[in-house]
Image 1 (cartoon, rainbow, N blue to C red):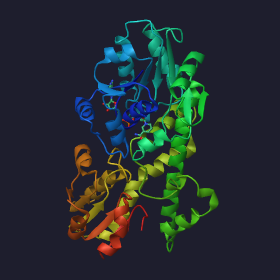
Image 2: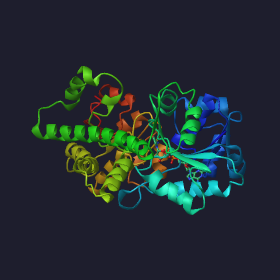
Image 3: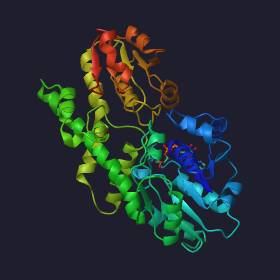
Image 4: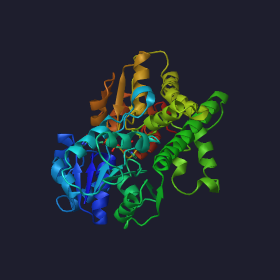
Length: 415
Ligand SMILES: NC(=O)c1ccc[n+]([C@@H]2O[C@H](COP(=O)([O-])OP(=O)(O)OC[C@H]3O[C@@H](n4cnc5c(N)ncnc54)[C@H](O)[C@@H]3O)[C@@H](O)[C@H]2O)c1
């Protein structure tokens, strides 16, 4: 029996994935609205395939609950999938993780051996230097009474279910044989290699993955800005031809070696910052990563400038912002470049902005207060606008040239 704490993108996917493997899973969620939605068989966000998994397992292998006592009493595994947002100086904020561990300890009233597993993304050394001491300070004997491990998650939003069910590797950060054995048993049916590594290595692999992707994106963006400065270069064509090189052909990696308006979403911005901060606090100031972050931070302004150059001096010109989610296929707007671009435009006096996104307008309105209005359809946005900027690479925007002859700024290089 498994308890998964936090039913966001990672937690709900993990809970339903374990249910699909045949395990019994409790899902604990602190947000009552989110818990109710899930209990009614609905997803709190857009994720293809996850809705069907919820229908299959709800009330059978998967029980969403707020009852810590029952869930923890029955479970041998407690999985933490809570948020680890930006903290002080870019460091990961572990408040939710500590809170969930406290709640777990308060619900334990027996001697059963349990493994506490952090699936949230936490910087290397967190389990060893922060989670274990946190538990020991509260009188827990590790590993005699309890196992502590990490199990980083590599799924992409918009592909959560497929990525979890067709994972290419499972990483277990472990420090004692009993936890390793139990975690291997949990993943028995996963159909891919399972690697058990040290606690710090497990956490490091996740940051190695995210920072490498961020490097590719920032480098692509830097090259696109350099190409614009030189002039006469078709950036989209250049990258697409580059991708024909056989070495870029396999897997989805080329999506990251492509320019746009900066990476956003919940993970890459905060994880690059957290890794840079943890290395720096350990005496290493990483020059490449520092500039990867700086390049990304500069992208909204650079993108807004491209849009303003096309808009001209007249501040009353109507600009359509096409795409609000951080990535196509998702309604997640956390750290979305679109919001930063609209803010930049507003700061320069452009407030006649009409924004459109096929799925993310509601989420965007909840998260951001920017000076713009929202169109009910793609066509309506184009009809109102004098100029359109594509800020999320939704496939539907690829036909824009057939729909309008107004000026277009293709900030995602999809045309
Ligand atoms: N989103 C991704 O693509 C992705 C991919 C890999 C790893 N991660 C990592 O996984 C973690 C979770 O990310 P997410 O996108 O699923 O976050 P999320 O914000 O969508 O979900 C976190 C959930 O945890 C709940 N929560 C917080 N404290 C709780 C508590 N004490 N008890 C019960 N519920 C609690 C919140 O209400 C929220 O619903 C983060 O560390 C993130 O970096 C995310």
